[in-house]
Image 1: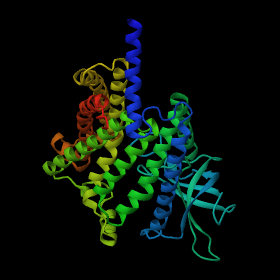
Image 2 (image 1 turned 30 degrees about the vertical axis):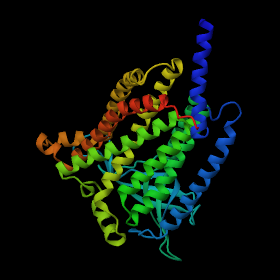
Image 3 (image 1 turned 180 degrees about the horizontal axis):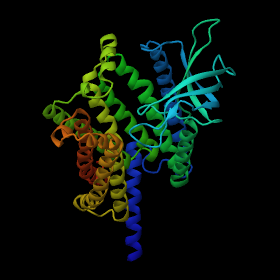
Image 4 (image 1 turned 45 degrees about the horizontal axis):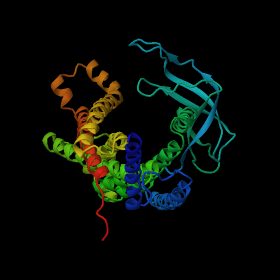
Length: 415
């Protein structure tokens, strides 16, 4: 009798998965049993074509970008050969950092003047401080002032690409080691999202198209592609995608209410003056950029909550397909409470950590609390962090509800 029940439970689970495959064309088992390549190869081919189109059109659009600086300036790598610190001294306000005028001899390593040795004046100030070391690589700006004239060079920053490449490689390796094949799919989804943002969303916003509509389109494309790559086409993916869409909308609605109550828009962000100039030239909708940024920033969090709850409810359903929708919803809600609680804390800490230096500076200047919380910078940071957190808290139970409905749904037999 027990053996019969076990077989029945197994058949019920397999039946639910099989039904998913018939309805959604690939189901929960895409990628298993040697069938994965038939799904992923065409999918990757389509994504590669779309990404290539984005890169091409985005590159063509970038040719028309307004350049507020000199077109003769190039940024190149340079090696530090010699330093003259004779004019440096400790500042009057104290501290160990030397300030003043530093003379640096550089060897340009790339560009049309590669191999040439130049001497530059490097001003070490409290708010701009690039202290190089002999033998190290730095970034220098090189301005071509015409034939027969020596290029004008400035030391701009340290060369940080090795550190960035280290983190990128570590990030990719840890994804693959920890998640296996799914890690590769996750990286592909992230890469496609970055291509979409940089070569489609930003150029379109620059040329005056609606930042809000473009942010919504970017979010929907990113969520769909990332979750389909990660889990194939099936009920779990459907739950996670729908929950991400709705959570995405929750973030937008919440921030809209905050914007109306707090009189906040795109003109309250840094670089407003520059963006306003572009607006006059290209039709850039400055007032909506902040809202679009909040939408895109909230996407990752709501996707995490959506897929976490969908996966948890799916495992519960597979273990006992006889559970009612109410029982599945309660099981998902338990996971949702834990997930949303930690994720909302994470978002608040991310926004706070990014603003830490500014907060310390404001406190050091003795800014009053009333002024602090009503400043553009702090109010915008609070609005972004709390809007995304509210979206997470709403997405979690909604994901559980969607999962309980979709996993238990059975199509009517065709007559």
